[in-house]
Image 1 (cartoon, rainbow, N blue to C red):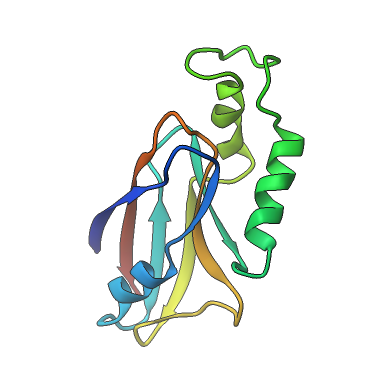
Image 2: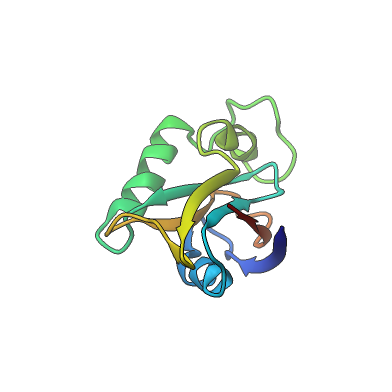
Length: 134
């Protein structure tokens, strides 16, 4: 098993941050196996989706509709609506697993591996990449 931790600065507003290039680089010298990506944060998740054609913005808009940043949340420390940030990982899981074939991610043509972060209170994230040989 091989693992590395990435430091990612997501900024102060909701974002979908593409990690695909870092993931490709991490598995490039490997053979067949699995790439496991994990975000050890209670307010972030990972998604495999198309980016650059509006799907990333659509995801943020859908999450904002489903989980509005208002005062309805019982978890109320930090900024208004922070409770929704703690609910989001139940919808956008904090992990993803992708097959690796001969050192290449077996993603679909338009798929990317993305960090999803709605929490503007914590702009610095860690993402753990782990390669499990097959």
